[in-house]
Length: 115
Image (cartoon, rainbow, N blue to C red; front, side, top):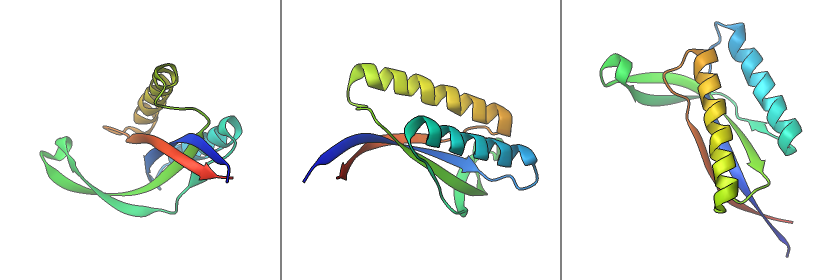
């Protein structure tokens, strides 16, 4: 059995149904990932909870979607990891600014796919 190692990136997107900006950004980022990386998946909406510093530790309910995409790179390799972290931080800061969020979570981890 052949195996393929990749790095899965997951971007947690807060849903803002009251703005067209959210839909525009989500569509753009999903398509960007699909074109640049060969595919992307956007989950159906679900509710998340988080403690917000803006509410002095109060719990905030947020409807989110997760956009995930597999990058053809080894995040354990220092050169790949440095480039990946720079790219993901740029995406995170852009999303925070455009969506007016105090933070946007982006995670990554290794995955192995059977071929």
